[in-house]
Image 1 (cartoon, helix red, strand yellow):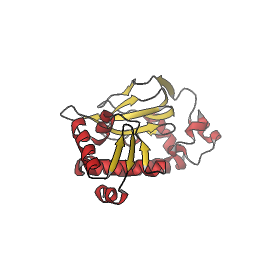
Image 2 (spheres, rainbow, N blue to C red; image 1 turned 60 degrees about the vertical axis):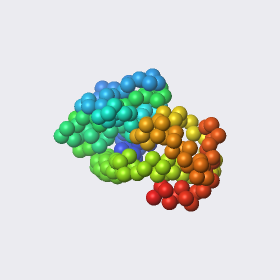
Image 3 (cartoon, rainbow, N blue to C red; image 1 turned 45 degrees about the vertical axis):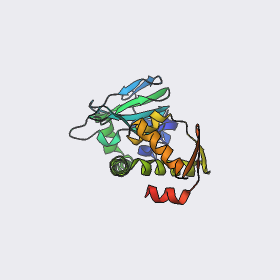
Image 4 (cartoon, helix red, strand yellow; image 1 turned 120 degrees about the vertical axis):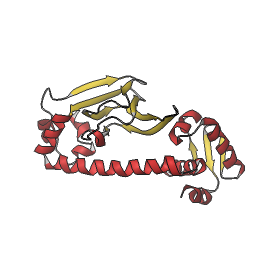
Length: 222
């Protein structure tokens, strides 16, 4: 367990022995979740630091129209909803669902507060983490609110292409899952994919997608 914890950005720079001292016996709880289990529900109080020890979860938000929007995926060794633990209104902004079988470490807020007071490294790490989260959430709001569907797709495909090191990528997500990521209706997504193919930007062969005009895609993604 502690080998995973020291890889979490909150505890970066600590030795295993130091981490073991912070996590005294009985001051944490480990819970296991199966694929598709609900870990937490949007609107619930966020009273625990939740560290992923194994598996992957997805943060999902439902808007006023009932549309599902995927905010992000979090895998071990990262933590869930770190920026909301100490908020005055510390309600979870998203529901958290297990994408794979998970093991999650729960640390009560008051226990985590003691850790921050006892260890300066953890305190500075936490300030860095929540600052980075603010930047991520700002970028996500911009992505969901101010970009066209075509712009969102272009940005997404360019990032996947860079990760793969190839202009041909395999999309594991279904069209509905992609629509949830982009925050759009599935028919609108399918129509936009067809338009981009007709314009010579991409070629779609089932799950395989090839980027034909990277320069034009980069302009769309700006």
